[in-house]
Length: 344
Ligand SMILES: [Zn+2]
Image 1 (cartoon, rainbow, N blue to C red):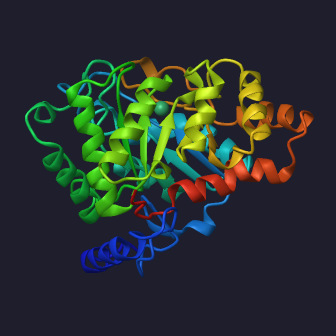
Image 2 (cartoon, rainbow, N blue to C red):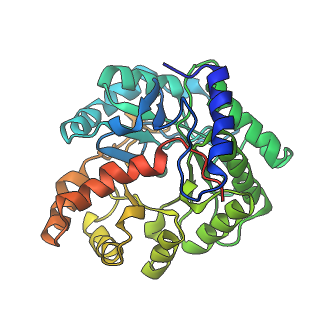
């Protein structure tokens, strides 16, 4: 059952008081403690089980100006995705993060239907996607302040997305490569404000390291620990030292495109991170799916199981224990996404 507005506010204030002194302490709010917000309401984080932290059921690349929910039929999307959802369940997955942001095809009612039909814990997000030269940003992002943008995202966290009643379980933003533009810096600041009000973790589609470190610095300057930040698509950085550096700084390093290319490419970075005792800061996923309304019958669909069928056997051959694997796909997702304010 979703938190009432009053409980939400009470627990947020509790978090501000209790986490200010000690780094890495979890939010101690009475209601949100140890929970993850799914599209069907909060669950105890201990119940997340095997988790895929970055996947997509639907993505629409038409752009913020033209996107609307009439561009797809929910039943058709579910029909297309269903065999892949079943396969994910057969692989033992219990929790599935849908990383499609607003104005890129985020559809809370679709996700609610999939959650009800599948029994999976499904998690959606709030935030805006700046990458690809702002094509997916609504016009008001250019005129509003970070505080105003954050107010929109905090409202979704408190009251639900639109009139769906569905609340986000994390913040998803994105930035282009290289030095952040002022608009993308504003998205990061808005994410920081939203985190400090809601305790939701910030995932940012980033790519290579310079933009990741700039975001970590901006968040710290805004009072947010790097432990609240997930460097999405960190596999795009070829210099593995930089992934280790981010992990050592406390950020989450997300190696998350196993669905694209060769899963064997993930063995070397994971071995290196394990060798440096940094596995406890690493997340893995496929970035797979999805139904694309632009294409006939949603186009080709990439499944969500190569992690289990291809990468994990390779890691076991290289000495990964069951405890290491549980760290990656069970314990780290709990640590990364349990609702909690992480104040710098
Ligand atoms: Zn993605």
